[in-house]
Length: 580
Ligand code: PEP
Ligand code: MG
Image (tube, rainbow, N blue to C red):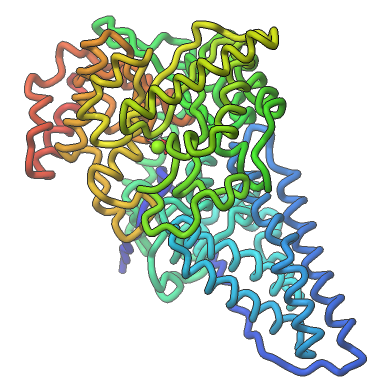
């Protein structure tokens, strides 16, 4: 009999394969007293396991393929840093010495203390990082129990397997990708966990959030995974297998056929040129970007430069990073966003800037933080200006909510220009500046900003969060995330209208721009500049190149007034139907 389980589809794609159950038995940790003369031996046992865990992670990181997304190594680095932190290297050692307890128990007590701290954090993003503590501690526990890194290291056995697990670490995911797994399904995890972000970047179909998974699935059982709908099917009949096999084949063909779009211009069938740019976080993204055929970088997030360190990067370090990117883009433009720290992007480099606040997403983040930290901001502006001597850079200010913020930022930029001139340092005097439209108020008043900048860019991730009042990283309200909500679409339309009226380009750089379901609708609304994850670009280009704007349904824009989400979905289907 077939069994269908529903979870959250977090990484698109179909997989058919055998289940490989990978539940690590939760270590049964008990306290026991260590003899006085064996305490130091117990300390060494813990230190050795911690060192081994670190060595394992380093070896995984060093074997990451050169074309893997930059996220991969940064997630693993986070775990390495945790293993070096005194909370795991010193405190459990003191416990062993003070309590004369075994290494496992000391580690478990410290794990519980750390988890409590994370659970009490206001920032939901940091709260979800409790999983990282568990992943790291679990690895040491496994080593203490002499279990090694479990089944994941088994050569060849995972080829084509569908991994069934309670939860997976980014490092596990990386290792398993090397082993050729077909998909994974976990009991825990959310749409924004590091592991699922990684799965998307690596193109591994994935479902998370199916509770009690282990009770339903047997090892080696034939399974079907649909990473788009979040459906897991066990014990399917021959017809269902055949149906999914066909869907899998056409998905593979579709992905393979996209490469031919790389060198094609992006243009609708009726000749409208559309500009496709990539989003990037670090110079390592350049290879993926060049493979995507992007016409430039539409959003370069600079936050990552400030993360995992105790002080913000100096001007020279930033200059080197921006220069590398702009030179790597070989004459194409690079839109660099000034640091959008705060809220979910809390970092050590910005420590103490945004402590215990109830609503971090509404707090001191993005441009607000830039203006509150003028020295840090000026350092970045100077580095950006200096990098503009080496290629085409545009500067973009995040989360602008009023004209004063914009004027102040531009005034500071002007001051930096004067300084550089005095110092005889080169920069692009005509460097363009833009504002991100991420707050409903700014979309409504987009005209005010359009008069003051060279371009606008719609950040739909935040715009949707603020319009619909849903914390973008809170799994409990994820179901309310709806780019088709008439309020969201109206705000997008207002921004596009403001750009048109003031004759400046408007781009979209949030996730919505890279989601193929919305491409035609956005084209119908008049969007001409898209910026997205480079992996999404060729698929979006294909849709654009197969669209005839003149043949889109005449009532397409009625979607903006549809109160019933069901009607909106139906109209979207009509807009997306192949006839057009
Ligand atoms: C957005 O909000 O849509 C955006 C592109 O910025 P970020 O996701 O970095 O907040
Ligand atoms: Mg944003």
